[in-house]
Image 1 (cartoon, rainbow, N blue to C red):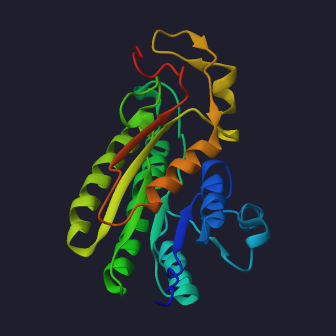
Image 2 (image 1 turned 135 degrees about the horizontal axis):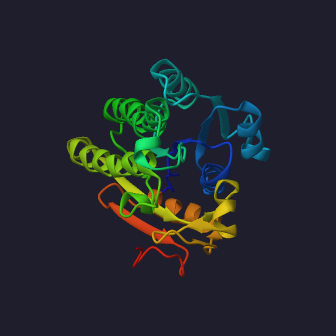
Length: 253
């Protein structure tokens, strides 16, 4: 019997210019995916793509809060590769910090626009592609946070966005069932990136103390996403929580 090669797999990773997005994009490229790397800075996206730039990697400058920009991203994927197998909704921001009564409305809206509406806009385009393509189906993985379970002090906007993202994950998972579209969420605590460097030096605790917290190599988070992505579409990791072992998360407060 002749060997039949697996069809090319195509992924979109948002927030791919740095941090977890860069590690996830590189892990998927190493696994044989064609990857569209989306983010605000083209130079950073090209750096993330490395030797794959111009080949298996497509750098697409994108503002996930802008519906037209998101539509252009998925249009570029359709034009380049004709289908979509995986969306990793990773783009996000910590947003403003401070007591809830001191947060500006503009900062609140900017955080929700990126962390929640951005994920919705990308999922909306991805689901439309996955429903229409043949063979039908695909997978969406949302990057949540341990703050989807338990907040840090002074993080109302970020925490609300991540709790809402959990609801969006559940809704997409349900709506996607008839179309072979799986949706899951990874909740990460203290992966070591440039964005979390301050946590290792000291983070405000629930009792007001400032204490350093352990971090873990961000490549482990990328490997977890890689595992979730590799499952057949009749299996799904609905929620996965990955933290530094000694992180003050369980028992926080």
